Length: 119
Length: 128
Picture 1 (cartoon, rainbow over the protein chains, first blue to last red):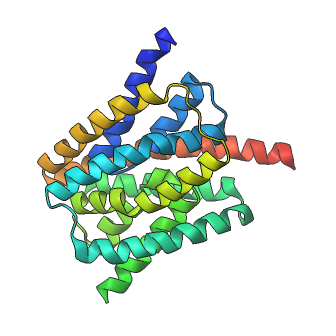
Picture 2 (tube, helix red, strand yellow):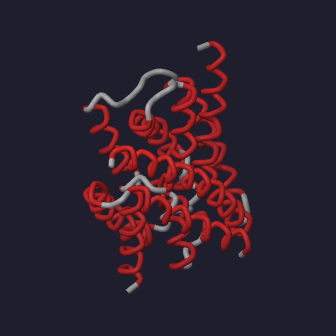
């Protein structure tokens, strides 16, 4: 635990820092940290990552609100859509090939990321 | 009209987020590339729009005993401090720089996502 304390601390700092700076994605850092440092299996690591991300998102969300970065006219329709889409996605997941969806999504992320870097 | 477009973008982002894709980053490029929303605004919306879903998921996981306590506190405390610092930096940076930085972050995350796709395919093959 002594040696791993710093690995947790650095992992937590990276998770929170990236999540706050870019408004998401911290979970994808927290999961491998939990898998490697705490030795958790994938499912437990994903579940526990939410416990790290949720309070970090609340803190960041307050800062974004404080600086007036969240326009309500966009937030309202988007959040309604997110709630409906989230339920649909969770229901759909057992019926699709997870690896194919993940491949497809990784390719889209790569394309969108490169477009933004070159914008 | 734009209400409907935003609703659909939210639905698409929620759909992918609900399937655990990209750690909830899908919504941000959908909003900036297709709806012309400012980078910082899209990030703030993403942070807040997923809170209810994350809270529900956390409750279900807790009920199913999936939460590990090991390392949770040393992980959460620095995460909180740095999430405040990261958000302040996001509010301070010019929108164009934030957009480029986010793009680079997305490219990095896509590598992690490819890796998890390969791991997933391997597990599926084992089951079959």
